[in-house]
Image 1 (spheres, rainbow, N blue to C red):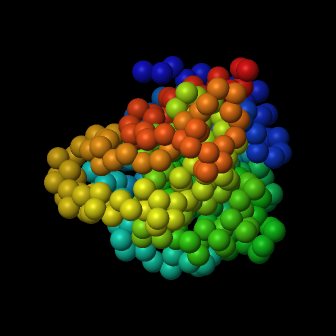
Image 2: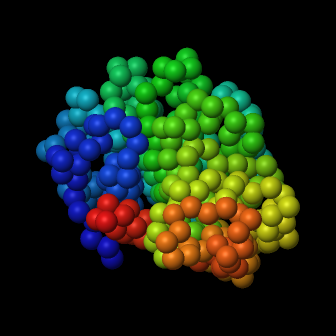
Length: 328
């Protein structure tokens, strides 16, 4: 078990600064990890309860949505827990039933319904903070990242262009919307939405591009050796066209649909599911060459045939890579 440092007043100050930075990402990665805690006391202890004017936690695993919101006079952080139980799997399977989104395009029906189960008082606190001009962060790992995107999209759909002041930071998140949604969302909010992805993490490759899902936001990508690569979603294979290995994985994705019921009934954890989903499927991924800080997909020397692995999806690994980057 990774011991994540508690949130300090210096961490709060980091989040209160403008822009998007890796220092902010490191703090929010820890806060996303704290969303997995089993008790309210654990979360409040990790956050440093006396440093916040209000902390609200909702942790009932009999519903799809768990997380916390932490508030000061000038700052609000909303963190969602990732996939952790059977109900999450049943909702994750709804990728094949997208519904229109008020912002434009269509979104994942399951992820949207998870967001809508956020307690009404928490949703109101979020809207009030945005309206008041507070510094607002929405964050989450895995499924929690998709729910964070859903929350952000709702704010954008209810706010005039240029008026939304919230920022989003996700880690190992799946795709939330289709091509049209991605285009509208990124036109308004890409510069203030980072999605951090590890090479060989299978979850950012789901739902598949073959059913027109695309990632929103700006990619922050770490290689298998932990080096940050300043590359695009296309270069990392995360915005793949149907002609790419991921786009050709329709038979593999049907395996998800066929096995979803059995796996949900067995209540297998997310990590076990994505391991079975992806471990045997080779696909083009970036492999870092010595001294490389960026790549192009046409340079075969910087590509390799790698396997997805659930260890790359660990919130602890995301945090360790961010921490190491800041130490250099």
